[in-house]
Image: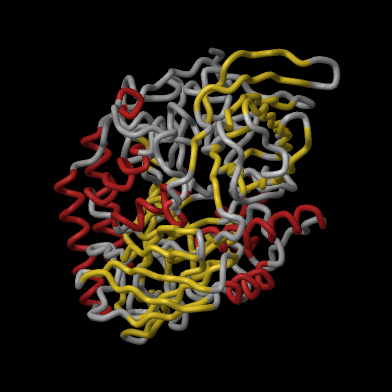
Length: 578
């Protein structure tokens, strides 16, 4: 195991490593389109690193953990000009009936797949799933699967918070396979995808692929309701509807049978709208003004970097946030495995989803000047070359398609603090038309252009003082960033990145409560309807989380945070009549 990054870093162990809970290999990766006929390919793969001159065998890698992580068993980064070569075999015991699909949760950045020495296909982009039909290439007996993955951290391809020269607010880069790989057997005619759209009392389920005749069985508190129909779409009015909300996240499971194919899924009844209350536009969930009291969530773990040791790591983060009184997570510049969104659906956690940034970043232009000289925020734009714009817009559209069915996802952010920002107004119009059922934040932080659903600001280096626009909800999409290292639970002993520093958790908790009571509560009376604190957990040098990077210590007082949450929501109700 090699040390990753600059200088010596501590190998922090999370509770999930020693857990006896389900592993990534045990857990179906796609709850929104579940079939019984699947097989995980997580576990031992052979890994080599290859360049133009030679290939070096590194040993066994544990998929789905990226090779840079400790849990992968490798702990090594790719150098320029290198690529990972993954190999493994799997058995097909009997002749194949129907079709066999090979699924990848994500591969960062460019993947090429071969089976039994023949090219199957590939994918470009590090955060989204892709599937390949391997029916014509699979053989009875042993099958040899090879995946080549290249990651040059090409800025024309969305890359998030990764940087080779990691440090501060930039983190250890990941590459290769970092989500589950699995096989799925399907009939010749099968349901390729579902699109689920709901209101407060009606759900519309649209399927792609499959046979003309279908049978739908919806589980409700009043029993199972069965319907038969032909075509690709059905709209169902739900009797005694129960809307999904953070405090009461009701889900309706259903089974769709289409010819020989049967899939399980679920839906929720909920709406997200922007409405005027007390003369101010506000975000409404199910027609009710809702305070989004949230945390920035980077989705990094000390054991697997981009992935927790077991899926329960996501459950821990969501449940901890809820236990501290929060009802929202801003998923920051990362798209997670579907299990994360399923757990948010199930537990009642609103997700504000960022698109993953591409393009170059410059500290002076993108961070320092807009804070020191606010006049530089006006008339800001980058230029994106055709390759970058095509990849970014393609990935954004794919993200919307991928997450469309999840009721927890209520809000999208296109650009964060100008990172790679270009054509913000055009992209707002395009993406809003693609999914008008969610709130769209075109430019989070600064460098606002003309078009957006919200006024979205970041405040770190001065007291919170916001000016609302009556026609747009006022969102404080980042603030705080208070740093508090906990001895024995820091990634680097010599580094403590944050915007205000505390040596002990008592002082950290007191300052955090004072920040909310002295600055956020008054902002609510001025129209604030969403506030996202930086952040849920520490990440490498950043020690500004409410939880340590290894998820071993919660730094703030649970009862005080719950009382604070009650007061925030009471102030919001007093302002907006929610």
